[in-house]
Image 1: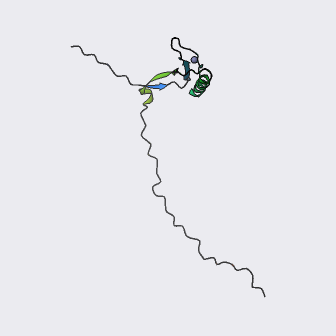
Image 2: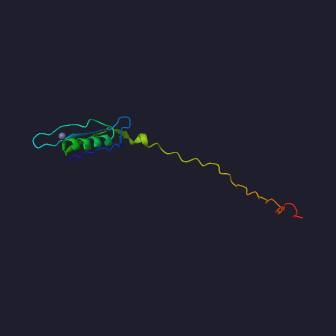
Image 3: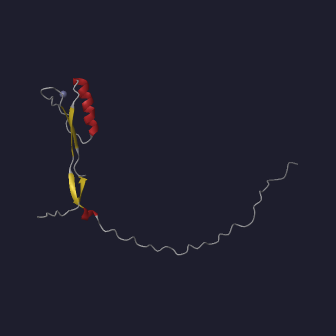
Length: 118
Ligand SMILES: [Zn+2]
């Protein structure tokens, strides 16, 4: 028996941040033929949903096919896996000398102002 060995090449799949995703709906209401009205393409789902609500209000059509596209890039994990350098042992001050703080001596008595009224 021949044995096929697939070598596993590690990649991570990431959304391509340089390309914007696309949201769109198409109205598929209708029994025999789909309506086919399109929302147009947006980079956020919100305007698409707003279009749907408005469109349903106007036409009574209620069934949509939603399209979402984005771009993915394969990144070899080797690119990511930069060997982490061991954190440099910072020179910690060996002894943070606890200088004895001398409290400011003397007690301050409240100064009484002036003499009593004669
Ligand atoms: Zn429609």
